[in-house]
Image (cartoon, rainbow, N blue to C red):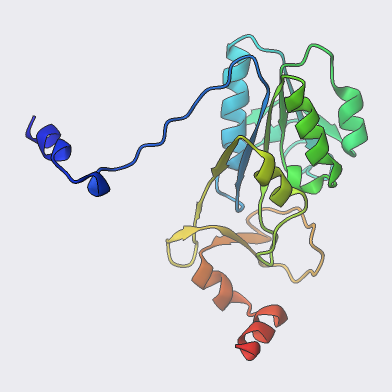
Length: 217
């Protein structure tokens, strides 16, 4: 009881703010789950899609064919939870695989799709469907990844997850590439990537971009 009284007597500036989440009704919307590798993005996507299935909603799940690390068709988390889906080569194949009855659409590794995926997500939400996408918001250089910035700007709900820095244990929001490969798209696991915090990411490989930035300061 005293705890409630103490909280009630706090000045307004000291009372914790708890945001109220409004649940849409009779309208579509877009949810984006983002973060670095090993932060649980696919795990969260699976959780939400499973709940939609339990609610007897018509669910379809997609992923790009390039992501065949654990399964050619299913979406699979690093903790080995999986959900059956359809692997597609591109956005056109995804569109052609949709059924008219679909109510909830899940897309994993959305950063690998081209810029048209933003208009697709908007169109699906505008048509009254719920669309949930998951993907990396930053590439291995710490730069915005593919269509993610625009998806984040138009989404009704955004969940940014954090991993644990393997070097120091701090919350990690970047994916550090262990392999020496300059291409932006390199699908990999813990053998190719580590989750790192800001400090450990910069200490790992001071890229030419960061070196130039330091020289210009």
